[in-house]
Amino acid sequence: MSNEQNPEMPDIAENPHAAEFAVLEALKAEVESLKDQRLRALAEVENIRRRAEKEKAEAGVYAVTKFARDMVGIADNFSRALAAVPAGVRDAADPQIVAVLDGVEATDRQLLQTLERYGVKQVDTSDGKFDPNLHQAIAEVPAGDKPPGSIVDVVQTGFMIGDRLLRPAMVTVAKKDVSASPANMDTKI
Image (cartoon, rainbow, N blue to C red; front, side, top):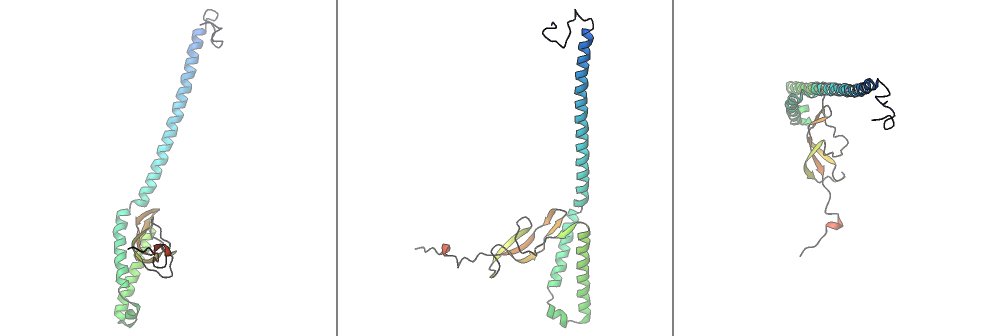
């Protein structure tokens, strides 16, 4: 290879250090390659560290998931027990019975507060809008003044843990009034 073909490489006959120059260039290329590999390895280690931190944080938040599922069943039983006693019966009840009901209410509140302290909170249904990501429709019912597809009643409270759904809220939704719709007035013979 002559100097005319590759101006960066001097001809060996003209320069006695051409072999060393070639070795030096090869070493420079190898150093650049190793630098690139080192930077990629450092980036990969940093990505693994971040991923491990994220997984550790998620494990802390979601570690109580199975326990929380069991506890929300207990919260349901407290709610059912309280709903079984109408206000009129409670007002006319013996003071001892009222004290027991007060205790059940206090225990229910404390259970829900404890669940909330560990990241478990009730699914919000106060806006009345049905969200299939948070609610499970178990029936369509005539709703009168409510728009079709909106929540009429909450049959079972739903719960979230962190930003994940632990259990959907079971709800009834307003049915579209088909009798008033002229498009549905097909006559069949």
